[in-house]
Length: 369
Ligand SMILES: Cc1ncc(COP(=O)(O)O)c(C=O)c1O
Image 1: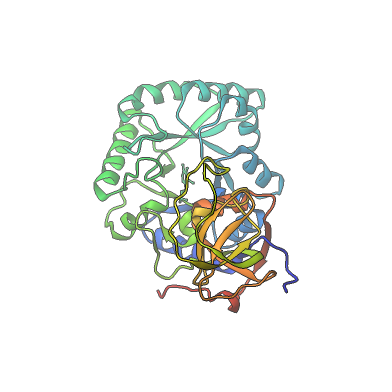
Image 2 (image 1 turned 60 degrees about the vertical axis):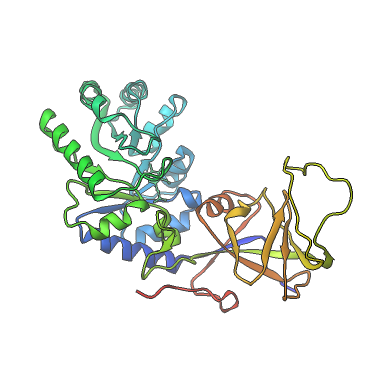
């Protein structure tokens, strides 16, 4: 029987610190600073402080509530709002964010007016669309857009950014990145300005960064997944020398029985509106762990033990435990992808615990450098 609380996410701060330092050095060698993106952990303050201890000087999140949380906790680093603000958030954005990323003139005008009210100058980064088709102004619209922005007294244009592989899966290739730098060059020439921040992307830029001989004008990249999970999201592989297991999700067995593998009776849709098909494997050793879709993005979990996830409902995950005889009270550990991490870190039902060493129990791994 376990005496520890479940479900829980075990967070290894030392591994996050290690990943941050390695990435900071690698990007630094190419003249690129890292902004630490903490939305994947709901701006968890222990994680944010770990990034700072590892040398990160700007922290970014997509939620103004998280920016506010970090500001109120006394973090002195630059706090960047990653997502273009909603008009309804403008007052808080000016109050709590040092910089916000923007794509709409109407919003920037509102930020300017609010900043004047608060006796501040609010810094903004304009996001430019380079093909991934999520946020950003089109490059052809940039000159007229920037001309308008430069007229506004309450905002200061401190940078231009772009984003890749978040919606369309567009990869930041050498060609794309050069196109971006060329675009920045033209803008700076046209307006006779030198922007301090040229933010060229996110964790998806890892392969480009490692291989490029000329990062162009890019001097900033915003990293979440590669710091937290040690992964290159484009290839899905672990970055050499990084820990991919800084987070471990632990759930507890609440039922374990030998049961048929196929439901019996007249079948319709389940509680989630799904019609699931089943293969008959005869009797199956099945265990239920006491967590479900209310707590975690189940499709983003991978059991550390050689057991399979058969399915889930709001509060149950059903496992085929195959050769393993699990009993109520046993703990089952899972690794997580970014989506699963986001869900557990924002779930009030999942306890957050902190470790500094790899637990022997779950055979955690690190790739060789
Ligand atoms: C604008 C922006 N920049 C950077 C990131 C960080 O992305 P990643 O976690 O892939 O590094 C995100 C997503 O979280 C984002 O929306």
